[in-house]
Image 1 (cartoon, rainbow, N blue to C red):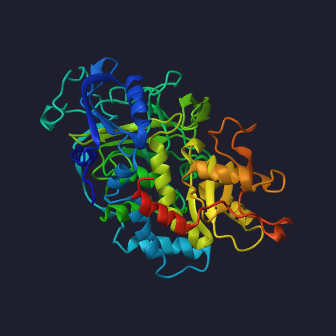
Image 2: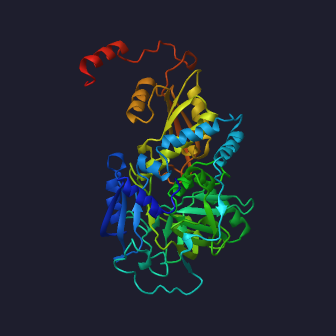
Image 3: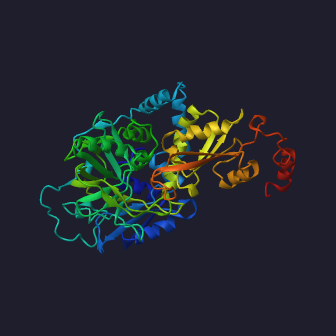
Length: 511
């Protein structure tokens, strides 16, 4: 089911008992983070939160803040209009199996074809709710008075006639040592100047003042690649940032899609309806017509980079200041009934665990097409996305675990994985306890591990150099004779199934 706005999604969460409303004024400076962090660390991810009166420098914003909206398996599925994330993965897997690919290139092409089977191609429209209110920054701002102290969030007519500047939006200052306020759930639209291919990525945005921000695209990201081409030519680079709209957009922006595959195509597939796109006011970039906020602007290659950060990151540590491009704002548009979506990252578990884990589930069929021996993959919360990867395989020949390690390190963002542990097919990789048991029981450290080098996440503070690091692969599978193992492998302790059945009948299943 396609959501027409983020507010519509919030209402669905409310009806499903997945939302907690907070009517009291709460500061966007640190206080929302503290409440959200406590909620996210509850069993199962807690509830989504709607702060109905967030304050900015003590003044109530007319825009409520929604956070932790995708911080559970149920809410993650609801954002896709599905019964479960597994159901989405199964459907995509069945489409991909319609014509088994013979190469990775063919698999990428088939993925695009499979998604298009739902008529998911985005379509252009002339206008949309994201343009209910338009503020062009080239013109003098008419926003001179403070926002109403207590707007009626249920009545859009009470909202200001003009949108705020960045300094008035309920943008969070998340952690005490953060370098400022950060937009934490932005979808950033860029375009390749040579091919015209669009990319929608998610890069944090630090607010410098009312018209400029930092643009933290890491060097391996597609947006950064687009940026390098503009820096080579010296032409101004148009950039558009949108927030809200259908909740599937943030997922699509973070999904590990093959390079060149449009994120709006994936979004249309998941929402079962084409994404309607509208042209920006100050550039030719296109954004969803139902977005809640759109921030338009440009990056000037002639301008020096500027330090961005520190920022309390998903690693659980602060990333320290580094130079990044400056984004200049030319327009802000928004829905009259806009909801400001946000998230926070930090020491796990957090909301982003469910977003990342959903990506793994949904794109597991793609991994299996290239590595048919893979049974399942998990990214444990403690590994903060790709620091730790657990993989189970149906092992049939010697050194197969190492083939999987090298293969995964060569696929997209899996190149950032610091630790890959491969286990046998009977291990539940979603149980860290089960994986650690096999890791400790089935390995000889020197024989069953391999070190290699490669690109690393620029957010990884432990590497000696930025974006360059080492990786460790561990084979925790049952060893075969061809792997240098010369002893008999003992069986795993397990009770006789008949005894289990007799005891179950005797106890009535109580034990």
